[in-house]
Length: 246
Length: 226
Image (cartoon, rainbow over all chains, first blue to last red; front, side, top):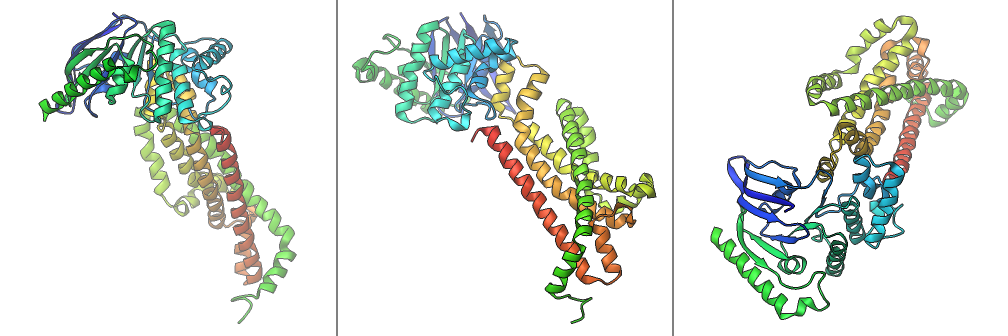
């Protein structure tokens, strides 16, 4: 077990915004959280990261500080800093010497297939490249838990698919546990071992579907009957859980 | 039309050329007082904002004072500043008054800028266990840079206005700035010379603004790399 939520709730103002919610994340596992906007997916993410405390319930994390990495919907890079300094940030904040940190940053940049942009600043990168830099920053400290909060939402379809495969390749190299938040059902099924469907606010687990098949995905996986069937069952689960609240 | 009321452009041109050496040295006196004030508020305003950013309690205590200073007309403070600086040191009083006028844009810009960092970047700094200093100097201060620059640009114009107004109020010739030239020419009804001083002041203000504008663009280009 890497991290677990046990009957956690989050309250904003008067009502309950999230939960009660329980989920367990095993080492090396990829789970996807799908749900409508505002159901508390990102809040669940922050709970798993240890950035927020629940109003009730229990958050368990078996990993130390610095072993968690976050990627947001926007690349969230420091606009004044080069790609290299952006990627080196987690290491430098943890006290790694500057030279060593920069070396590892360069290595992380080539892992996300971005050699040669180390000296460029975020404004000089395309959306897809900036997201790869954000990915490199997340991976540079070899996290055991990688939280991806709708990381591809702002990208075009081609870039999105390329990055999905790249995330799998990177995962295969060091096998961190990954939580992938999205509201795109196909993306959720493609990315994860397990898809959890959340209900509208307050977000609870509306259902869970195991996705069989290898990771990284083989060519043509998206057209396979297995993939289509999984997408259909997640979709109907999603509409059922939304109808439940309506 | 009498010359004292509205001189011909040619008369103004002649006055400008004749007075040129005096106008230049007066302009330099005014400008150097304004620039000294700008340096003073740059250090004080940015420094204070940094201090307050580290402590919300201090911010609640100091901010009303800063706002109070901002809304008090400089003319009202001027006599006091002149008395405190001593009549022989009107230059000091003028720098102090110009600093009071120019302080707020720098301080307020820096304070706003220090809070302008992307909240998700703040979360990343939380996640990676950044301490207070790392957060201040690696995130908030660089994020504030464009705001601080903008504040300085506004403050430069304010400092110049402050210096001129303060010279008027001080009413002693010891500062020998452009305002003194205007007063002098006005008192003697030498309107062409008055216009010459006025135009010099306007041109100097314009040049100062243009210089700071290009400095801002140059720094911002480096800041974001494009």
